Structure formats: C-alpha cells, structure tokens
Amino acid sequence: MIKRLWIVIIVACVVLLVSECSAIEPIQLSIDATRAGNRMLRVRMTIPMKPGPETLVYPKWIPGEHAPTGPINDLGSLRITAGGQRIPWQRDDVDMYAFHFQVPEGQSLVRVAFDILGTPDEGDFQLGNSADVGQMVLNWNQVVLYPSHSRVADVRIAARLVLPDGWKFDTALPITNQQGSIITFQTTSLEELVDSPVLAGVHFRQFDITPAGVSQKHYLSIVGPDNASINIPKSVVSEYSKLVREASAFFGVRHYDSYHFLVFLHGRYADGLEHQQSSDNRLPRMGLVDPSWRLIEGDLLPHELVHSWNGKYKRPIGLDTLNYQEPMKGDLLWVYEGLTNYMGSMLAVRSGLWSPRQFRDNYADLAAKLNNEPGRTWRPLEDTAVAAQILYGSSEEGASWRRSGGFPDFYSEGSLIWLEVDTIIRTRTDNKKSIQDFCRIFYGGTNGLSEVVPYTFEDVVSGLNEVTPYDWAGFFRKKLTSLSPHAPLKGLEMSGWRLTYTDKPSPLDQVLREMQGVLDMRYSIGALLNVDGRVVDVIPGSPADLSGLIPGMRITAVNGSAYSADALVRAIERQKNRTAPLKCTVRNGIHVEALRIKYKGGLKYPHLERIPLKPNMLKAILTPLTTNS
Image (cartoon, rainbow, N blue to C red; front, side, top):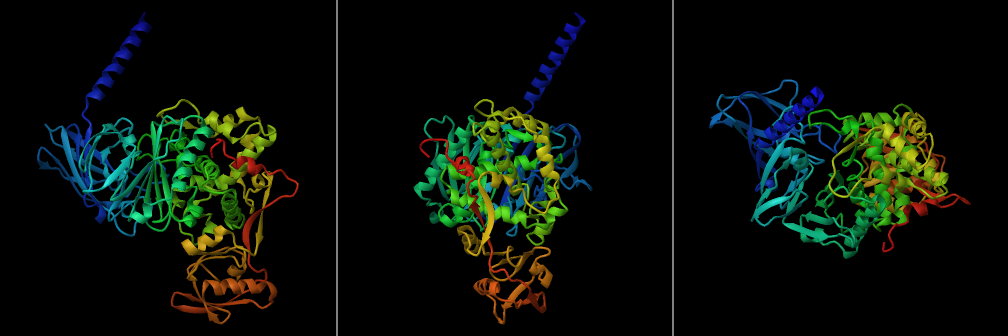
C-alpha cells in the first residue's frame, strides 16, 4: 500500500511539473532579414525569466558541424532590457558564449536585441557565406540566445521572420501564417528550430520530386544569383526523384514527415549540413546545371539525405548532447560520416547522378590520396575522429602529414572501410545479404518523425553480428588504430578492383583542374598545386620534398621557360625518358630559388582497374534497387 502511495505521489508530481512547464510562455523570436543582402540580420527576443541572476548563452557546438563553430564574433549591438529599463550585462571571462545579468524584481519578461553581422571573408555556414544580394540561408542557431543549462528539446520558441519584398522561401519548419514577406512559424522546440534552416531568395525554384508510392513529400528547392543558375535540366530533377526512391527502397522507412533539399547556389566550392527533415546544400553558381560540377559534387545531396537516418535519427552517443554548450565527442564519426559517405556515393550511382565510371574515378582519387599520406604513420584514423573539432577547416598545406585538409580522413577512409564491410557481408552470406541488411536493422523503426536514438560502438558491432557473425569489434579496432603507411584497400580488391596509375588523367582529374584550378602531381613528383603554380601540399619523402619544395612557394619557371600548368605537365611527362632533374624556379615570399627535382617516372594519375578472374562485386553494389531507375 505504501509503495502504491509513493507511485501516486510521484505521478502527481510529474503531471504537475509537466503542467507547470507547459504553462510557461514560449520565447518570442523575431528576425528582420530585410538587409540580408548586406549580410545583416536584426534579432529581437522576448524571454520569460524570473527575477535574480540569469545567464543567456549563444549556441556554440553546432549539430552536424561537430565543433564549437557558433559564430559568436558575428554577434553585435547586444542590448538587454526589462520593464523598459536597460540591464547591464557581462560576458563570462572564460566562456565567451555566455552573458550574465540580473533580472530586476517584479519583472518576468526580458527583452533582448542584437544584430548578426556577416563578413565577406567568412566560410562554411556563417552568415557571410550564407547571404548575398538576392539570396540567403538562415541558420537559426546564429540568431538565438537561450537560458543556460537548458535542455534544447524543452525550450519553446515562437519564431517570426521578415524577408525582403519579392523573396520566396522553403523550410521544413511548419508555418502558421504568412502575410506577404512576414512569416510566422509554428511554436516548436529550440532543437527543431535549429534543425530547420530557411532557404530564401529572389531567384527561387521548387520541384516536387516525390516518387510514386512514397507518402512523405520531397522537395528540391534552389536559390541562385540569377535565372541561369536555377534553370536546371529536367533530367537532373528526375535523377533526384530517383534518389528519393532509391533511398526509400534501401532503408525501408523514413524518419521524417517531409523532406526538403535546400540548395544555395553561390561561391566556388561545395558543402552541406544535415538536418532530419531537410539539408542545407551549398554548390557553386552552376552547380546543378553544369555537368562538370555534377561530376565533382554529384554525391553531395545523397550524402546529406542519408544523414536523416545516420546522424539525425540514429546518432553517436557522444554527439547526442543536451544543449549547444555541451562539448561533443566525435570518436564514432567514422560511422556517422564514413558510412554516410559510402552510402551517399552508392546512392548517387543508383539514382543516375553518377555513372559507375564516375564512382570509380572518385574512389580512385580518394584511395590514392590516402595511400600516399605519410601522416598515417603517426596519426591513426580514430584520432582524426576524436580530434575532428580541431581538424575541420584546416589548411590543405601540410595535409598529407597532418592527415587533414578541410575534411578529416574519417570521411574518405570511412568509405573504404564500409565498402570492405559490405564485401565481407556479401562474401560470407554468398551474396544473400549486404550493408543494406545492417542499415535496415540499425536505422529501421517506423515511418514518420522520430526521436533521436543514440548508439555506441557496441551497438554497431551488435547490429552487424545480427546480419552475419564475425569479429567486427576486432576488425574495426584494427582499422581505427592502424599506423600502416597504406590505406585500407582490401574492400576495393574484394569488390574486383585495384588501385593503379597511368599517364592519362581521368575525367575527374580534368574537371578538377578546369573547375577548381587543381593541378594534382602528388603521384609523380609529390606535389599538389594550383594551376597558377602555388604549391598547396608536398608529400614528405617525395622527390618534390627532397628538392626543397614547400607549401606556399610559387613555381615561376620550369626548365628555363616561364611557368604554366601545361608547361609543368609536359616537363613531368618528359622526365620519363630523362636522367637530368626537373629544374624549377620558385618564389618563396620575396626570395627566389632554383630547385632541382630528381624524378624519372613521368605522369601518374590514379585509376581503378579490374582484377582478372575476380567477380565484379562492385557492379552489384551499384545496381539500382528499383525497376524504373
């Protein structure tokens, strides 16, 4: 009887607590984006608070970015008031993201005003790289302060956005009202708000790419600087519809009510940020129109779509934090990003965004890079995951020794490891099972928007053992701790292909040079350059390294003639039949030097070639699941 009485008391307390929480008014958030084209957002907030000492925090650890990248430097003109009176605030002298102040007695609402000021030199997802004349992506984490120590799933936000006149928009966030350029959103949690960016602009197109038989709506929404950038071919729209169909067939369920591919066409490089019901995709101006850009970045949207299952629904336990101030632990990013990278590239082929040849060229490129990376001998793969927060965005200079140049190696090396996992499953089950069986077990459940489910290393191993028993724990630990100078190429070989080099560039090599200005001579003299002659990276121990060539130098002459990319390529080609060293004049700051590169091998570009008499398992891996693909 006493036990039952305690249960009744506990239940009553929980009900009372829930009722009290639900009675709390939501935070009112208003964003004036009418000056977004000038990289400025004006923010006004009304926050229910009790009298006494309080702290507001600006989001620091941003989901999907795996690092403390919240752009606090963009926040300016902060003003806090209550009852019409200004309240002095003080930034924490250790945590730059926290603001302390005192709520006066008798006051229950605090009003906060600040501006977000982007700068033209910003990259990634900061405002300076997310807004320009006529277009914008609004990431909500950049325009909120919230009470410290809160659980973001419990913080309620009622948001309102004012866009410039004539702009159209898309977002996965439910809308309650729109009057012209003023949009009012449904009250939601801070967690869902931050997980729902807004794409907006003058030059806007939206395509309904929902395949027949799929209940959840899927949209491809694009914003560009002009009409030419958004005039994408019908065949490409069809391929993205096939992507949805293939992903649906692969996973079996979808953990969202609808899905929005948000594509921002701007700049020269690509990037993407995953969300459960949408993705923030950045592509160059003609990224969806020009076939060359589609060759380079054809797996971007598939990668971000896969994250709806792997990363948003199922998430490594170290990334499943209570709020945006709690540090994230990235030790399982080789699953979060590596497996996603593998599945994204696979789905790119199955949907027609890439051909099998383009897949092989991309995997030849990443395999060669990893296999010519001396940094592997001191930094194991697991450390690139643990240290992700300091490796993201690191320079390409010195990347072969650091094991990072923009994106850590758990993306590309994870792809090779999960390809090997797929081939092991197929081999051990006589092709009756594959990585799909693991994904359906691990990322399954029911259709519709789902709560986040955290996982551990042991959960991954257990899920694979349900598919086929194997020493998966030992397999992964060996891969993660290896200091071998060689990349894990066994999966490629088991699938019937091996890495080789020829003197002919692949189509991918050619478009990387044409579209991104990359001159990749790493597999001959050992240097990665820009076409203008600037040295980006030099492989330690290579002929270029032994000659004294270092990142940051600029080659100005080759064998006595003025430098050009073609001149350097021809000179390296001729080295195959010469004993004399390659002579380069280089500029190093204000200094000019003459270097002699001792190399005899000619041009070398990576390719995948068939292994004779070995079954072509890669063909089965890349074959579409649906009949109309």
